[in-house]
Structures are given as C-alpha cells and as structure tokens.
Length: 294
Image 1 (cartoon, rainbow, N blue to C red):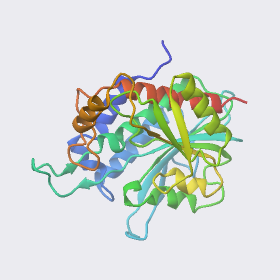
Image 2 (tube, rainbow, N blue to C red):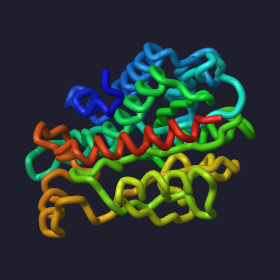
Image 3 (cartoon, one colour):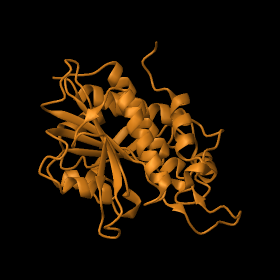
C-alpha cells in the first residue's frame, strides 16, 4: 500500500462532518457533541489513548454557558516502541463551526463549515492514520478543539488546566482552512517567529517542494496560540496567493467558486479540486514524521 495522503477518505470525512444533518456543528448543540463523539471513536480505532483523564472526550465549561458541558477530543498515538510518555509532538484542528444562523439569498441557513474546518479535521485524521501505521520515536498528540469559533474557548480551557496540559510537547501544528483548491507555493508559517527548529524544518521541506515560506509571530487566530503562551513551539501554516499552474485570474475564479468563508455555501462540492489538499496533507505529514525522529 502506498504511503500517501488519501484524498478520497479526506473528502468523505469532510463531507460527513459538514453535511446538512450536522447542522453546522454549532456551539452547545447535539450535533456538536455528536461530532466530538464520532472523532473520539475514529481516534480510538487508530489506537489513540487518553491524554487528559480517562477518556478522549475532555469535558469543559465556559463563562458564556457555565451550566453546559462541551467536549474537546484529545488522544495520543504511541511512539514506535509503544510508549506515550516523554517528549511529544502534536497536531490539531477545530471541529466546531457556526451552526444555524441568518439565511443567505438562497434561503440556506446552515453554515456547514466544509473548509472551516471540516477538511482540516479530515487532514489531521489522515496524518494520524499514517502515523498509526508508521510511528516515529515520539508519541503524537492529536487534538480536536471545540468552540474555536466562539473565541478559541476549547483550547484556552485546556491550556488553563496546568503548565503542560498535553505533556512534554515539543511542537503543536494547527490546521485550519489551509487547503486551497490549488497547490499553494507560498506559505506563511504563523508561529515560526521567533524561529525554532520546527519552523526551520517546515521551511526546508517546503523549499524542497519548490515553495517559499515566511515566518510570523503567533497570533490569536488559531487554537495553537494558547499553547504558544505556555512556551510550546507552534506552527499554523497559511497559504499564500500563488498556486502552481494557476494564473492570478484563474486563482480568483477558483476562490470565488470554492472559498466561501463563514457562509452557508461553505459546503461540500464534489468538484472541489483536491490537488491542494494532497500537497498540504503530505507536507504536514512530512513535518510530523521528521519532527518525531530521535
């Protein structure tokens, strides 16, 4: 079996997560909890073990709704020797979205969140699949945070539980709407400045693929931000405006057709080009694989 991203499975997972029946995975809804339990089951099937407490479902409450328990999903895949202890690396995506809100011109009121961030969640699962099949020397933490759209509430809740809530984490990669319809050849590495070894590694792998990167400091636009404040090196890749094989005009057409940020039309489209997804998923996997070496 070829060790490569499975874009068919990635699309199928993202499609299931962003189906109308999931009602946009809105905050404090039954569909949001259903998504959390489904992701926990997927990680359990890959061999993930709890990081916090005795379950991959990590409950928390928030100031806006202190009586309503919601869940992050956090697991750790063992290293090659079977251990989940010691230095770890991590990868994360948020699984919540906006739910049901104001209808658009078509009358559609379900904010499905296909690109934000069902496909990112699916890419993280694909990296986890490959890691479970070929683990490195360090355990891999896989975290699916909740209530990101409400102000990073899930990641902030976990970060407040202690100085090392995910263990001795040497890198945390955030994946959020970073899968454009084409192969991006320019990337911003948010969190890569001040520089750290993982940022240098990500840049080296990118350049080997004919891409360029620029590093920027962590900003409060991703769940990795809370962990950067704890001293964890983080990376949050953001695609640039140049895509391989696309003119600026062609890229603009693709963006208009497929990139519908925070709109009900951000929903699965069978014609969505998966070439960018393949390259992004494989870059992330390579960063994880190389970071997991002794």
